[in-house]
Length: 424
Image (cartoon, rainbow, N blue to C red):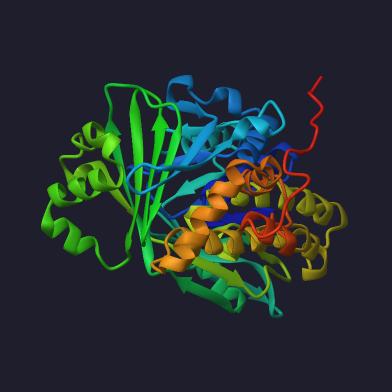
């Protein structure tokens, strides 16, 4: 069986599926291969940040998300382990209408995107489809050798998009080197029921400790706990009771909530890594999402940035289709437009995790001092929040900002944030 398309997308994650939709709406033929047997299942905590909300709104998908599956959250509190409040960040200072975070039930956003892809590009999504190698003619990529449902297939395409994650086979076949860093810490995610509704996010920080609580719809709460990446087997062998008591020591006011944690089936494990591909494009092939720039989930921007990649690349591919030029030079504007923001977010996530999870008491004191300073400094709050929300591509703090955040310099502009014009 042989197939022909204009754009072949390997991977139907947030980036690949959104790219399929965007291209279909531009009238550009595309085919998405997904190695999984169907839409994703299982537990995962997901926050839809303002830039993700805006992107889905522009695609007409935000309004189709089930109302019962999302929880708007405006306030996020940062506290020391034990309960002392350090700082509160208010999403309300961001421009309306996307001035809140949406905590989503697992996989709801992804399922909504996949449903749209299948509706707008019938037969354009192939599950159990795996990339094997490139098809080459005169050393030029003209498609791929793949398998669909275990059967070999050649798929001819003008360009191949690798949206196949941090260990991308497409990236390897492109011959692109990448720095892949595996963090020493990962995240344990638990979904807990609560009798009293929680409306504000909570981050507890201490000595080598991060515990986050995110309110979700239907009186549910996600708990994200940073653990050593090699500790899962040991934790499970000890049972849930010791971990439950550990959480009570960190956040004693939520003891009743933690009593709902009774079974490991309520949890999922999120490994962490960072990918920095040397380049994202070659002639007739391009990388997006985690294949190009995987980042620590602490940034809360992984899916968002993959979706932004998709929309940005769709515009570049439209130009390529118009000129019938699929060279690296024609694809490079995509990388130039996107690389600075994702690099900044990777660095920001690394810096935050380093300080928030530090075991050094001096750095811990500095971290707490910065939080307390930010609690009374709306300008610095806005700069950090706008980065987390995906609304800026430059680092939130310069050197003067850092000294001001640490309380070593006064900030005469502490109460100043940008004035936003309300939408018509």
